[in-house]
Image (cartoon, rainbow, N blue to C red):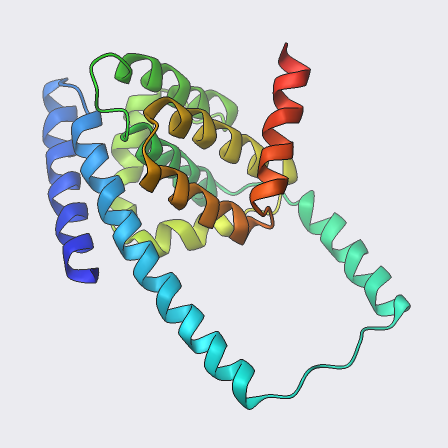
Length: 208
């Protein structure tokens, strides 16, 4: 799984750079990069789950946190959520959203997917979308590095923008592997499936 994932990512990146330099449609290459990322991500998830299972079997349960510790932890979380997003994190978010857009390789949806994903450049103040993406993409051929960088984003609004944009692109593509990829990332950001659904429903209510 890991080898196949790397093959898809490398081929996709090379194809993307070639298409971008010629002004051709880039969503075909992004689709293969996305597939490669899913394979690499699932492989890592499986390895981490096995490690956690082994640790759980060899350790005793932790003592319950006191109320004071919980309150302090909550304060730290609130403070983290207001941490500014760095340029590196913005580039990683741009690439992640583009990968989800790449699942829309059908000619009927890729134009709409491009418009949705290009909003990320405006949101993160990255200038021209295509230029920013072409610069950022070669830095994130490593799927683990990309996802780990996105997961360091603490700003709540930025995290929700990423999840909602990726959800729109996933819903447009209708591909099960894209949904599973999104659910795993959302979970690591602190949103389980029900919480992600609530976030989407809340956004729909606000925009209608």
